[in-house]
Length: 587
Image 1: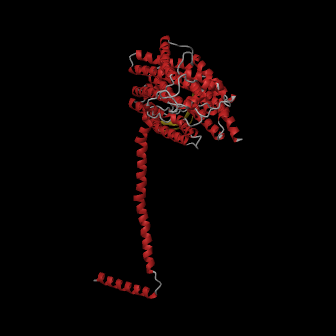
Image 2: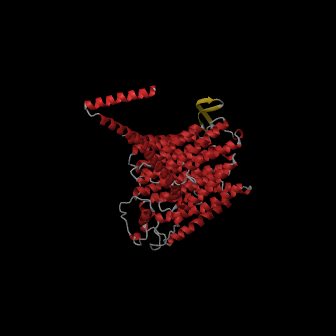
Image 3: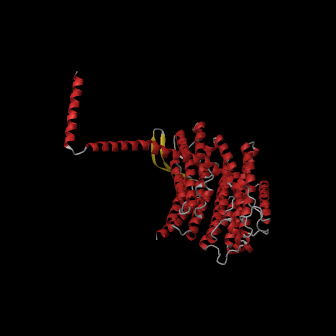
């Protein structure tokens, strides 16, 4: 009964967010403040606002959350009440961030999202990897949130207000502005899994696939992009901050794309892809131009559609097959049985991968081209940042096409080559590819899970045309050529049954072991030192005090013999001693 109530509440709230976005569309921007108080010249309180950016993000959050809630009705059966309650709270927290016109109200939604992500990633708490991933996500995002909190204080005190709409870069000193925006950027980097706080997102994959779709498509990681877009006047006024943002974005997009090229599990490929695509959005924002901001938000919207679609498709594979690992799925590709058994999943996932790879005609093609065009225009104006962003996005586009084609071919198609080629997925067992699993009961997912897939697949194409087709044909031809350049090597390796994975990429550049040595090992040694100090120093004094009291009591106990002569002798001796002492003192 409780689970049913929360299912209804979850779906209803998500649809309410969509309705809210529809009602606010075309309305004049408005702001409302409440619970305001003044401390000297500083105004502290809460406020909400509605404008075009609010409506855009509410629509994205509402649609993706509705798809996730409906999809979860058929997907998840373990502890459904707590799951749907947390997803609803997660959605509400993102809505709070979107409508906030107060830095404090934004912070509340920001922190509630972090807590909900911890609980949802660890939904399958009986699994060790789920618990580990949840703790890792919580710690790394909390680390970034420390900077975010101090950034709010620096900007609010420097501007004399915590109202976002009243923050004027012209009224804030350059040093304060740079410091505040850099501190906010630390929180954004943590929330959106950018270098150097990127490792938590791929390790969050043990959570339910609908949760992954919600985190990667419309909440949590997208919140970082939204915050910079909302405070764009402040960020663009600091050249130092924008340069740092560009460097972080360019390094992250290439780093994550290379890691995705060597991942051997569908959800992990998609997770690294999210990190890379978010970096493309940040690179557009780092240009500091109106076109760059528009392109970044455009890519945010299209990415929400096709990345939500891809994670839900991965959930179908997990739900129906039992695994999303390449080595397992490819055994179902014999004679195309996986495609035939899951036709809707195959078709919709093909659309999602095409949009992710920016195949012409899909929404991802138009939004990614918008970022490339904005970078090209900025570079032509003599900006070094523009050139770096342009080169990085173009190279990332080719790498993205490579891992999309690689995933599509290895999961859904049987390689024409013999088993056992270089880097193939048989784990050095040449007979593994000859094993034929039982596919007699393999069926596509229930309609309640497939309906969101179809809706998001349509959105992954249609959204590219909603803003009108503003295509630079030269840029379009270049990005199309990059897709082909990335796809050909993936196809060539697949036809030869080979998937060479360099060790450095398989180990994801060794960042996690490095962090373990730099932070986890010293923290453990410090903990052991603290325990030893407490046990051997402080505890030793406490134990010594207790032992002294025990020994003293045992000594006094020896005097209690019960012999009257002993007591009288002791009394006489005491009196004599006192008399002698009195005589000595008197003389």
